[in-house]
Image (cartoon, rainbow, N blue to C red):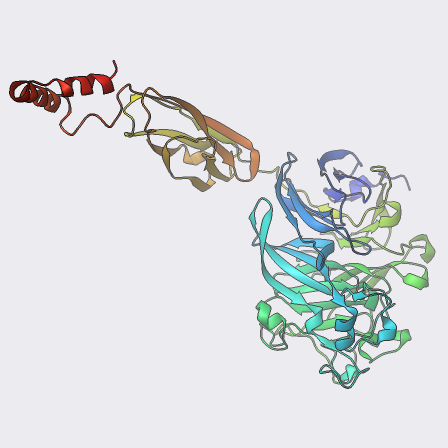
Length: 551
């Protein structure tokens, strides 16, 4: 098929991707033309997300240890290339990897490894024969609230280490019957005995349920956990909207992992990109997974319908595996081996029912319709290698409503008496697109003289129709006569630091020092001089005044 010959069958939209060997993230249209790029100082580690209004959330590879998919940090990059947030989650004890997701409140979910020593693993019931090296790297999830350009606060976290079971060592507290506890994770199950025991490689969030979906690659499963818990509840087995704390609410893909199935029951092999199908798209609420296939030697895109109950929990018959027993929909190539990726890759259901598929190892993107006919394709030619982690479809929308900061006014005072307070004002307004919202702030760090008060110091959601915001300025002049002071007040757009203006500031102080002139001023001085002359025949005060008030 000619790559773009069927474009008239497609819904409009763009595709976002970050080649793994490149510092650049690309946005292409349906013709394969590059509409925009964002450049970072770091390789991706591994995922990238679209935030809207031209901004992207991009993982970065800055860590000094870890396995495949390691990152160590994340950036928010604006349309103009400004890095508005860079956060590192990497030290000797933990490191973020693979995927990242921003919630509607602006907080960011990160997948990460944490280091457990060999002895800690054995104490938790790990069979020593399943430990190749000095440590085990179980996964955890942190929710980070950005607090500054390079800072953030962890406001919630979940650790698989708090939800283990094993039937190897009866002397341990978590010893039990694995098949009777599908809500727990068997510390002795997994594809191999490397430190990267689980290799969680994707994360998704369902806002209606307040649940998180992750892909546990080495278990051949996808897991759902409760996000409504507190961190304390997430470490236990009760609490949250669903009453189970941080235990697994649901798992599917390989019931062998909790001893209720055989190899014949395994569906997923080395899977990636587990996501809920979004509302408004065919199959909404189902889960879509790129099933890499492993030793099956072919890949598929699989959709299944979880047995969701009205209360948000999931149906499970005692002694049985979680349903469903069959896939709702699946796609394989013809012949199946024509689509095979041992790692990486993803898929997304579109609003018209088509499915966009990323064959990541070769950088090949294609779209199939409901009849599983290929209707669009694209081969990546960007970056030193074609390989990507996955792709993101961006549906058509109105152009970004960009705010644009403008300031007017200046601050200039002359012959100010040292120590006196003077006032002034300047104006801030949004001259950007209709409907845009400007968040702004001031920075006076360049002004190293005077004692400054600015009201207001910042503002939020300023629309173009709101007109000017008056900013009042008050400053106590330096305690220095015959001074000449200069500087500026920096006003900037909080969403785009390069959108800024400087308000110039100048001040000169008078020739009179503040100290010699007592209360009462010149008249008081004249009376005092006269009295001194008449009664003491001294002119000390005259000299004193002339010495300290230099014309």
